[in-house]
Length: 328
Image 1 (cartoon, rainbow, N blue to C red):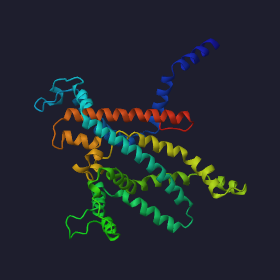
Image 2: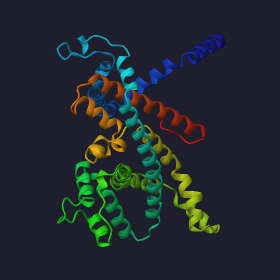
Image 3: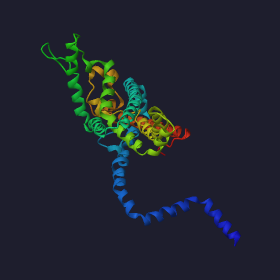
Image 4: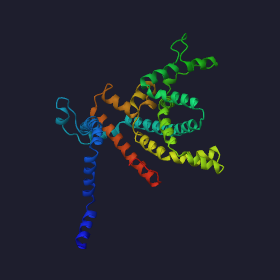
């Protein structure tokens, strides 16, 4: 009897997949209504996220519209070679990386700082007003945001024109107006500031929600021990929200090799292509914005997404190594 039990136990240990599968079906039968709620989202993801991945093969084909994607002949790595030899690609890649790294650093620090300051406010009415004011721009589309930016920074079109608000202030101070939207050296800063105004509210709400989950008794015990507000901030608040910071960082790192198309397309022009042309606008220009190189645009997009995936995995592993839970 003991021998049989030991044998059965050994088989169970050696085949953990069978046990996991049985537990899965057990939970599925018990909580089928919960899994049913997941079904619409799963179907949506399969149809609209995984379905279009059928077109990835364009990167390896010489696309002929008459033959369709499936019937077009294979071209191997020809389009990837074209991509590597195209100087516009390297310019767009450099601009994308510089912008995303600068924005990631500035937005992370600024968002955490703003959330910490809002968390320290004791007047609830003031706190609510500030939160709402900061969060409202997040709901504006980039078309509206770009219009507001251009109105603020408008350059006088003629001698009788006063230009935008910023140039009116500059002129009133006795200086010459500046054509902000035609200055490549200023364009990246303009885009970063516009993105901060639009997106900071979302990150602030996430961090404030994380701070709300901190046990108040920790603060009370620290005050009893004589801790001041700075010590409460550095010893309790920041360490408590560190997992949230890491998760937000990992999610943002995935976009280092991509950029918001709406954001750049609605703001840039031919004068600022040297610093304003990113991978998203480069892909648009060669495929839909006058070009027909669908294979090359697919190859560029595929490479950028794969690089983003690699960065997410590396960042997640680094987070796990320093004892901070990642996303998987």
